[in-house]
Image 1 (cartoon, rainbow, N blue to C red):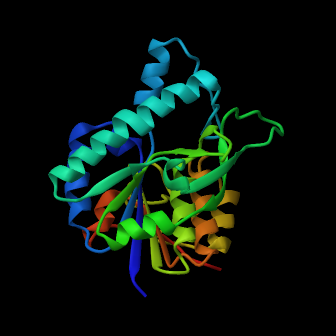
Image 2: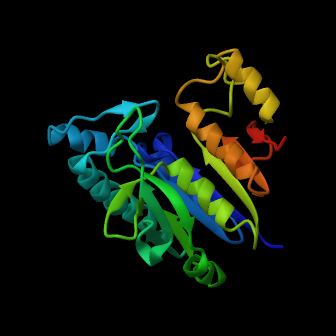
Image 3: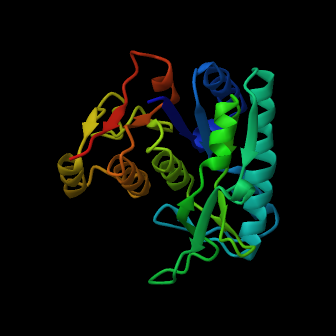
Length: 259
């Protein structure tokens, strides 16, 4: 079975032009099928402030009203995604940019209102891999931003970690999928002030212990939930750490393990 790498990058890479350029150079060297998923960084927030649109984030998730959706569509699917594609082409990595609406690849539904109304936030319902598989078989790399659609003409803001997880799950029957979450730390840390205090392996039992000891902060909770969802849905490998874990064998990072 062939290996497919699904790699998600966050704001710490996107917000720094040099970091992004260096990452894309290394990403381009990765052999075999691969998919890149990116978040939006601070650019959408800056544009919202310029347009005097209030930004609300609750439990690490953005509240998406109609104005905010317009902004993130312009920034995520436009400027950020196309700049990444251009950089990859420069590095001889043929790539195509995607939202979930393109090729009907990721269908979501508007998150139901319970205690919090997240607005036009989408929860993934299905992933259609046929179009993507054709591209991968022709050595073309899909690059996804954090936008999906509901099949009825409505775009939805969807957590980029979730998109990466669902893509890895969607391909798990045909590939040995590996999911990598790249962010600013070396992995899950026992002490946020000690970059070397990496928890190298986490299973459900250790995860619960970390939660009970308040080691895991709010922003990490959705990420780890996506990790466990993926590993429990037959994704072969799930890792969290700095992007160096992709190419530096001496890097420290966290591996998520099934129970």
